[in-house]
Length: 230
Image 1 (cartoon, rainbow, N blue to C red):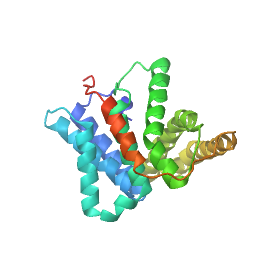
Image 2: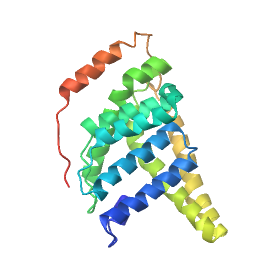
Image 3: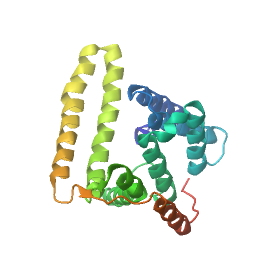
Image 4: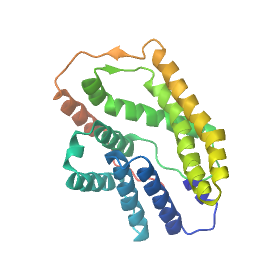
């Protein structure tokens, strides 16, 4: 959506406002669970920085959004989805690829960024996933690269189908039946096939969660400050 808005003559601030509205609609459609609310609040913080002509800082936005959610809903601290989203996003902000929006689209760059994103998210959540679920998947790295674009396609066209249905119900239903439903079913089928591959479920013996503190400390020692391109 951001790439598409970049092709319009709209000012950057209005593009951010449109994106913020769409993220809010997505959060509402997803049930307003803590990870979705966190995403919307974080988008608001990041967008607000540009509105005031200041550089946006991802870690500050993530910290502010997480703190606000916990103040409004303290039990969210025990929501595994919320915890995984915060940990993975913090790692992506610190170690993920730099945000380089705009055209031209380059497949090589996209694959490299997708591989880096998948590896960072997988490693960052590894202690928590193995502690909570007692198993990990060696195919998670590949699955993320394949499934994330499909999931993004589902989200975009589902929103498009919803907007179209407000004007013409038949068009909205058509978009859903032709694009959203088949893509969703294919994504679920693909995930089930990946899970059946050898190494799809590797049991992890129970361990003390305090080891996660050493894991996080090691990551902090590797972190280096950087500035994303404007």
